[in-house]
Image (cartoon, rainbow, N blue to C red; front, side, top):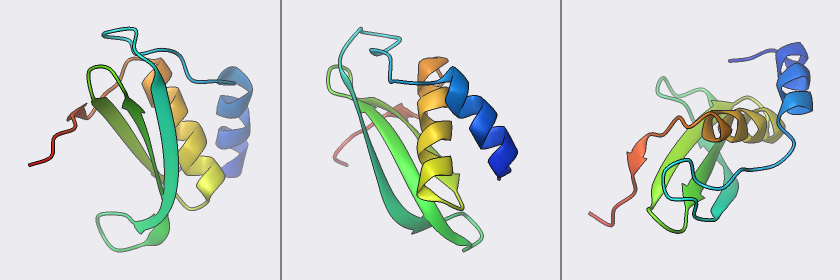
Length: 86
């Protein structure tokens, strides 16, 4: 997990969501309370493309940290795959 100092630095560089790296579709973001893989409580933020359904998620101790990191990953073209209803 990133420190608040790192989150502050990343937040200055990443102000808003870019359109999808793959299809140029509109991206939306949501943040919810959750847990990481080992059960530590925190927040999960997911950025999702309305066009091609690609997504990326990030976990953080605070909602702000999760949101900033997910936005950063998204804007760099990182993705966790395509969301499905399976």
